[in-house]
Image (cartoon, rainbow, N blue to C red; front, top):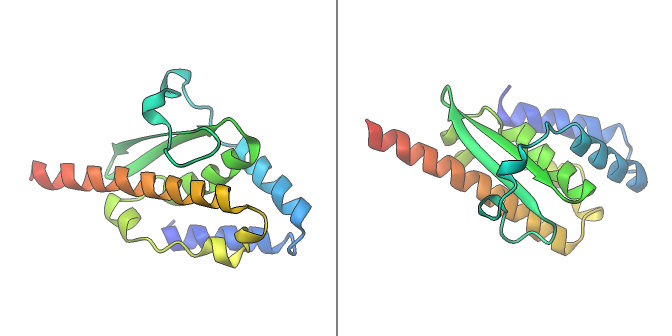
Amino acid sequence: MSINQTQDEIINEFSLLDGDMEMTVFYIMELGQKLPAMNEADKSDDNIVKGCQSKVWLTAKLENDGVVFEADSNTAITKGLVSLLVRIFNNQRPEDILNAELYFMTKIGMERFIGTQRSNGFAAMIKQMKLYALAFKTQKELAK
């Protein structure tokens, strides 16, 4: 599935909640619970996303030309938010991640249920994922 197809799927899921704030927050936390467990050894300072108020750990590796992300957070809502990004970017080519225009946040009205601080952290997560993609793309080009 492409990045945009996944975003559309997420928009569809959130539209079923009909803008209900409480249900939306609960759903985001539920999504975080479904995130595969991250290896405890990877929850190191080296893997912390800078700019997040909560602790967010993020790792990436290149497998079969797709970037595989692992993430976790010490707060339920932040874990849910990072799980959305993992779902969108996981197994996508580095080039596609770098060129992706994320629009799902606006479409689901994310600004209504996450504050400025968390919004900055969300932007930091996206930036870190794109930095990993850039590193893998550069590595691939240098290997040619």
